[in-house]
Length: 157
Picture 1 (spheres, rainbow, N blue to C red):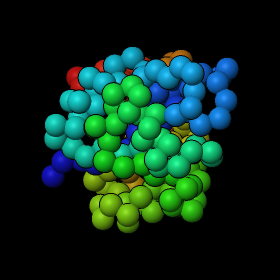
Picture 2 (cartoon, rainbow, N blue to C red; picture 1 turned 90 degrees about the vertical axis):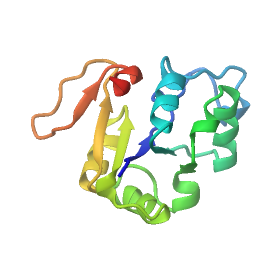
Picture 3 (cartoon, one colour; picture 1 turned 90 degrees about the horizontal axis):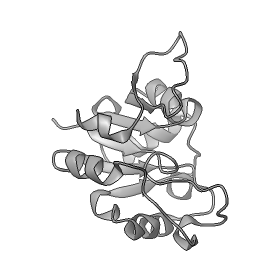
């Protein structure tokens, strides 16, 4: 059975520009992270992809609009966040609710994100496989075991 992938949004699939404010779909500049298009295209060939975000201001439609601006929306099956789950990312409950929504076992899901605290640790606690996009080569905490990558294109190797 193919895995279901969850990706963080900001600085995992799309660049989170600190000088831009408000909803990303309204930003004057939006940009996919290097390798995002090719990685999602490759994974989407055999797996379902969702976005799991902690975005506070955006709805699922806003997020889809931002992804459409950079050509990534066609790879995404849906968007999850506080806006439709009622719980913020950063707890294992967030991932359990996604699994229930998509009728999937957490053991068949993979979370890819750049934050240990909001993406990786709670995903592991919920029973997901986790892949840490460790852009800055931070040391892995001794009590944590997961795959690390420095760039998205490593997911396809």
